[in-house]
Image (cartoon, rainbow, N blue to C red; front, side, top):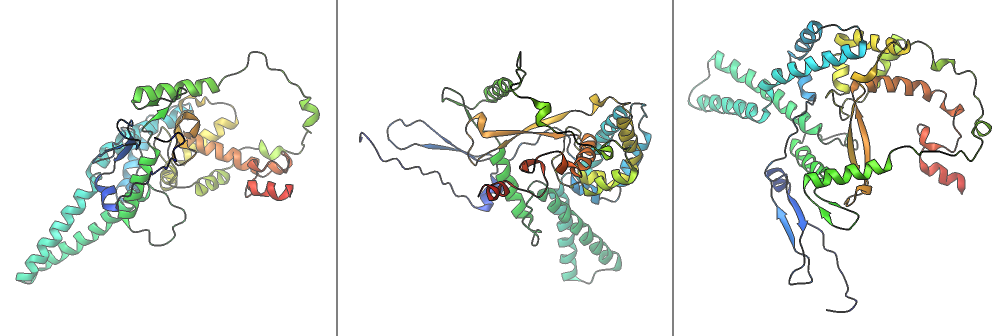
Length: 374
């Protein structure tokens, strides 16, 4: 072997769309170089993506005819608690159990679609032998309408697992969203992590321990912080901020609900913005009480102030813990409160921060800073 060999990295593995759908949990991992200077790779083929046991609201549930009735019955019959935060948390807990039981009859979309196709195929075969009677014709029309509904639900199911904002037309290709959701899952899964010694950690307990130690070392407070500058002299007081502390109005809360995105990842409660919009007329009184209790400082947010910490890759091929950025997925009730406060602050933020602080100002980017420097 040469003293200074010319190294070439070949890391392209190409698959077809059919392969991605049939074997979604496929991984390619490097092995040790034993007899050659080439790096062998091991392909691990998996036939399905594991599903989490946590509750997650599916957007296609809202398309079912008895969905609103189910939510209304459960929400109205749940026990009422004086603490508005605990009241909403308790009602969401009951609603999760109710929707889990209700959704079992529509959870297997592929089976429902296959059954509809089988009925239509049978009636078409009968029609080839003789004319269909009126009940049979009506049955085929009804089954075709139901098949169209199930296909739409399947499209919503997979489109919710791969959000692509750049696509405006042609989004009825369920196979495309199925394949891209699989690729997105595989890209977001953490197969292995490199520790400080350069060794690869592949077992779940080892990766969890590595993440825990790394983020624990970053967080905390110093024992004796020292202020080396005069903060009151640097920050000038701003007057006329009464709009930030006015009581929450119903129209203000309703407008925030209308502007919430419908397909963002949910928090521990499992409900997203689409659920809030579809069922707002049924649940809005409890959310009004939540906002008003917050304004009067008569509330404990402990029951709803929980979140999932999710690691988002900073680059295409993350290797170490530093290659991930943690974000928090909040409950929908707490997200509503934070959006109301952020919306109020947005109207006066230009008077609170310097014009160069572009990260706090809507519709501005880091490129504006470069233009100012030039």
